[in-house]
Image 1 (tube, rainbow, N blue to C red):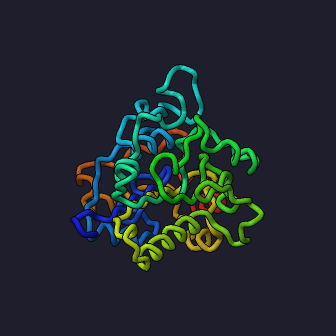
Image 2 (spheres, helix red, strand yellow):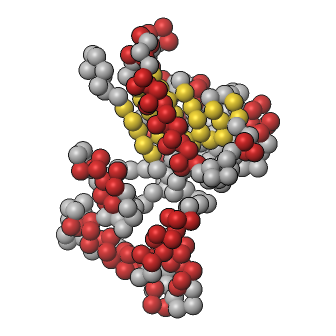
Image 3 (tube, one colour):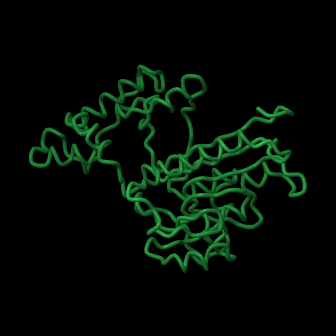
Length: 291
């Protein structure tokens, strides 16, 4: 906490995460650091998203309904007005813009690491040159134009975790051939956020007396579900019991942790998912897919 009582703020977003996909919400997945935050903080149980990735992000960033923010559906222009233009409207401010305050009296230092996906389309196969020439135009607003002092991440919606498309540092595209062989996007944006925090703690200029706002915006676990091999190996045996048993165990832990009332029964299995006991041919393959 900085002088004046203003807190430092870190907002962490996971993409397409299920309600019970972290340990403190009943998961079999190990999430010790998130669980620690939950233990010493508050767990909310009635949060609503906007059904899709980019409208949810637009709403989270602006506090507006996605149609008010300009992304009523996805990040393409549906040619039916500003509610569906596919990128953040100029007259709608993000939380970063509000926290910064007037340019001559900047209150917060703001940084974003990760997936943007609220500034029109960036095709996964687009060239680095196209991204460089397109980003920042009227229909492709960037984090820097919407209140963030620092940005490392991807402008588009999805792609490889090993060679992410539209990867940018502030206003410069990072060529894929410059990435190391062991590059992994989830780790990279976490590392960049940590670098920012360490640098912030060691600088002593008057400007750096400002509190900070960090938006750590993950792609994971959004498709294509690229997980490191050691993580897959770790969990493969854990899922060998099958999806029916995993659902049963999660439901029991949700009740045990008092996230849901004890009278709530487990929802029916999806009609397109067969019982695990009938999945005799592809069991090992399906268990590995879940891992």
